[in-house]
Length: 280
View 1 (tube, rainbow, N blue to C red):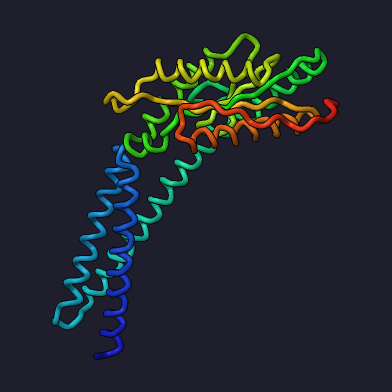
View 2: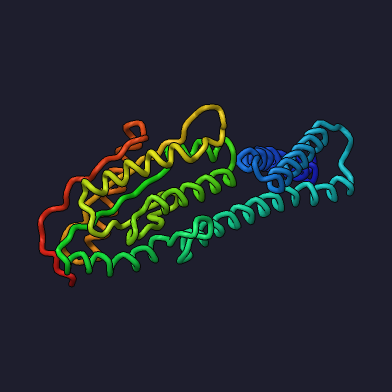
């Protein structure tokens, strides 16, 4: 075998391997985006195209005719297609990540109309300071629908976003006058309850859980009921910012424990250690 023929063989093997790998990646991405017609269609078309490239390369490898200049020309489009397809997949993934990041970092979440965590913390700090001046307790709750990851995997992100928006409406309406709701992170909603002890916050959380299950239909519409897990924590003393971080962290830990125990329950975090309620 001549050096030129050996080089052509090596290039074809590289193209074959790359095309098969890219086809697998593309079809797997299409499965993830199967609820998005545009992305699913692009992935399906790209996967089929790379499989065709792989088959054509395989046929060329099995051929016995001596190589000529047309064989070398064919290498360019066959090598370019997988590269372009990977670039397209990367662009779509970056767009999705940018959209999620923009929704999470905007002052107001565009899907629910509730403030995201930085704006929520900015709103609740004066309320905590007022509770301390008036010597009344305040608590936080965090709540999330159970099984949202499974719902998104089965029915797509659009259905999950609609469900979160409906849950945010129920969450907002369950609050008392003066309560401050918002996003603690992603799908987890939270609120500061000024003047509420941990027991009072637990009672509100139980009502929220019952109302959400009664008002929100399961997307499967097969008789299943949506359930909610809620974590409750009392805001302790010390600097306001640190006390809020501690309270929200405690309520999220309680929420995680409620979900781990099967969901559809309310759990209360351990009370914070005694310390000065200084605002500094």
